[in-house]
Length: 181
Image 1 (tube, rainbow, N blue to C red):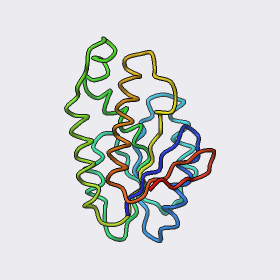
Image 2: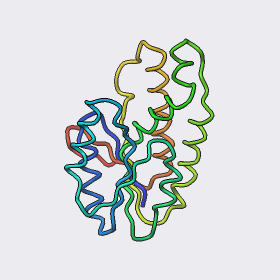
Image 3: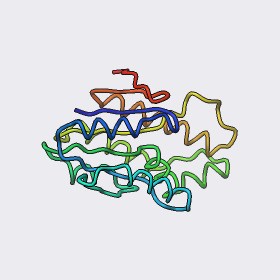
């Protein structure tokens, strides 16, 4: 079973994902994509860590998500990926995509497209359960800055790709889940 849980910031998507992982009856491995690059992000990471159950495994992987999932997937495991949005940001800033967009260039990042393709191809093949958490950023205005527009476009494409290969898609708004697929 593959599930994509999407929603806005502070919508309750991570809490729902954690609840579903805990209720799965499987051994849970939390796959964290965040990097503590500043004090505020370090506090957010600490809040997530405090909330997680002590018996859950943890894999920290900011870039090579498909490889990490391949290594840790098993029939008796629920992989909880939190979150695809930070993974996408990490990929954008790991290559030349972000600097090109900021300079007004139409950027294309092989690493980004290759990583998304690898994840999309891998998900249907994995044993066990996978829960992906991702932000829905397409409901607001079109950003003014080129880099912000690039991010919103890529996030929308990533969510569409993941929704296509997931068995279940849930939108969370104000803590309330709405089944989309």
